Image (cartoon, rainbow, N blue to C red; front, side, top):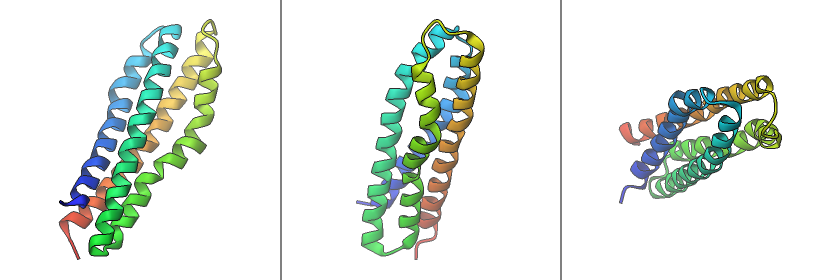
Length: 145
């Protein structure tokens, strides 16, 4: 078993999911009416948070297992980078999430759209985290010590 390869695959899946959110899901969501946009975001956000959290945890655990087998510190670095998505989601994205969850369905469209656009911009931080972790893992896979 090559846990490092699976750690890379989980990080790449994280990267792919976050890229999909930014390039496909968010623009489609912004094309909806206000109530439909909010309703779709609430369901999508709950599921997406779970999926991204699982990808990050699996990737970090497998990276730690790979570090224990070969002692290459790059696996710890990559695992730490992918786990940085948790505090990023909590401290950076959660305030916007709280605002979006608290908006009543009949609210004016303008503040809702602005918050939703802000949320979409913040989601690109997850893309950068996934990209950085995948790059570190690819480096460790391509040039082993």
